[in-house]
Length: 381
Image 1 (cartoon, helix red, strand yellow):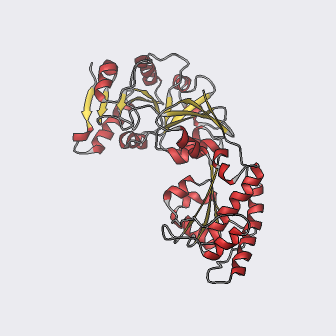
Image 2 (cartoon, rainbow, N blue to C red):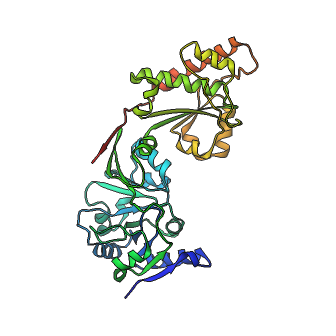
Image 3 (cartoon, rainbow, N blue to C red):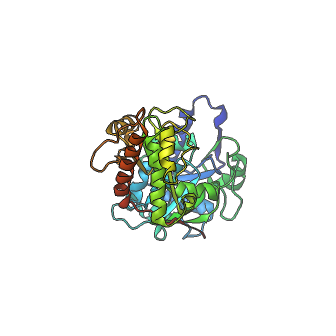
């Protein structure tokens, strides 16, 4: 029987399309979805028979794993409880998006152990699992209503070109599918980047929609310094942190990004594009740090999501961040390990800025001592 094709672009209510896909998957059927990369075909990962049908329709070798599509980055630790910091960064920064994260599967508390045997074997045939959160409203809506994850693969026979339109899906796999959701041509038109992560390195198993340059930035350690206006305290903290880390890694300030470390600053009430306070520029200049080109920026969702550690000058700054982004609590800390605020020197003499910088440097030395700065190793398989 040929697959039913729904043109979602002309659907009156997208919720009806989502419900129909959920019902089909719950009944053990195969559904082809549009994603931001290429079209994919999915089966409920809780249904052994459906996963078996997916493998059969793909013609996939027994030990070539299916990807597990999950709801969001917060679910990654349910399936890989000991996911490395690099893996957690990529999940937090890239999902939903065109990256598949491959990680070791050996933790006894992993929800993978709750998948039925055949499905588990199809997703984890060896010792690793590939996780993905596609960036398309249809499959995200379906995942939000399913009781478990989806087994996912590209909607083409193994070894054949990827399908980037629904017509290509029907042509290649139509006799094996129950439902095809047509949303036109895929946005990227190329598969996701597949990245295997370990503790302090990553390996590109398949180059895809994310460029090497972007992938390296996304995998880097990102520290964010925060004050109010982003004109003195946090910019000085940014420069001092860069200096301390560069000395620790025995590299130049301009080499930090190549070593997998990024440092930035922002303000909870900053104006965009402003300059650093002249006194802060002078104090930094005395120790060879150039703050003259600093541009102020306001705290944002993107900065908070990307930051591995957010260091605030005062408790009120931390409270303001967590009031808006409570999920960042585990990554947001007062700069002072001793719970002391760094007072704002604005309006004071140059000596006040110097005292402020000295306090910031002292606190940073203590705060950064226990932080692991891996020399990011990127390999292509």
